[in-house]
Amino acid sequence: MFTGLIEETGTIKSIRKGAKSAEISILGDLVTKDTHIGDSIAVNGICMTVTSISGNIFTADVMAETIRRTSLNTLKEGSRVNLERAMPANGRFGGHIVAGHIDGTGQITKLEREDNAVWITIKTDMGILKYIVEKGSITIDGVSLTVAYVDNVCFKVSIIPHTAANTILLDKKQGDIVNLENDIIGKYVEKLMGMNNKENNEDTKNSIGKRAVNDVGSKIDEGFLMEHGFL
Image 1 (cartoon, rainbow, N blue to C red):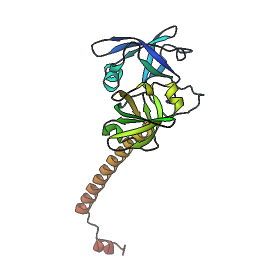
Image 2: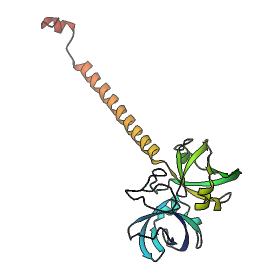
Image 3: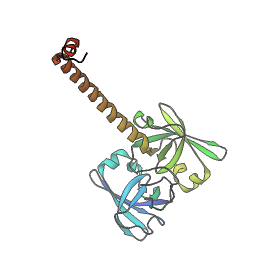
Image 4: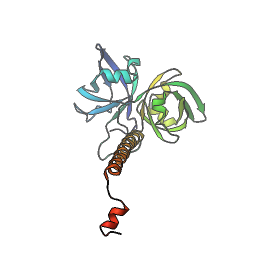
């Protein structure tokens, strides 16, 4: 699990592409410290398992599903990326719950400065927008951010100077693609509500069916009760 607080920006050293998958090597001075093979590092919000480490460079395998869901195809040797190690059990929870499992991508349609901050507008599809709420959380390229505006076409976030200085977000320009991960709580609530509604519908149907059987087969009426001393 991650928090969306970027530890450092790293650099892509190489991307070796297969038919549908890839192997990626990334330079990161901080995230490679006290990191072992099998550990998780989020790269632009994508949870990757470290398969090898050589000095300050780590390597990870990327499967076809990850390439389909993310902006990895836009990266090349020399690209800067946001990096975050998995949260330690005794760490501070400064962002929000980030799984590192990308839901999809969005496209930057506008960057606009307002005093010390920069507004970023991102267009995406309803499959992602339906989980985004104003003043809720969203992860953009691994960065935990607060949603300042959302409608049926796009959403907006405002980037403070610290975030701008310590991530690659303002390296982006209009038209660039970014990775998006929704707040996981909304997805679980939707799933559970859907299951409960299905169970309730089944219970209702079963109850109606049982009543129908009882109504047809029952011989208990007012006369029966009087005859047997119940009335």
